[in-house]
Length: 153
Image 1: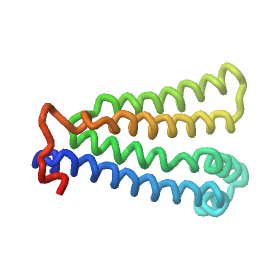
Image 2: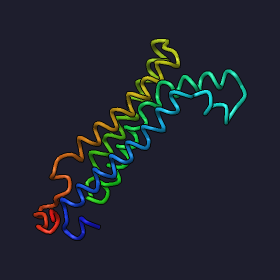
Image 3: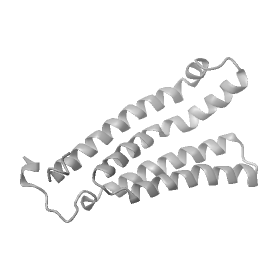
């Protein structure tokens, strides 16, 4: 809406505030899940093996949930700015790290689930950082227009 109204700086500010809120909420959820994984897993299963694997996943991956929240919020902002290429490539990098490198580590190098989950967490962090880096430059929100002076008021 702000981009359409040529309030570019306001659009940028709203995007980053929203991304900060998304990061904070998802990070709190992730930390709670990582600190108390058995409580969360107990809601879904009584199978001890499943609880152990799920708890391992949450202890390793859940602390990276904030990066996913950040990346998703900034991806949606990039849609509003009609500049999705780099954020989409950040999502592709996440998939490559989590799926391909994680799968390769397990299949070819005999790594365990812990290593696979570390690759998933690394992919999540890469997604958040790369999406933020893509959206950070001011030119992300400018399409050959100058910002409206009212946007800074």
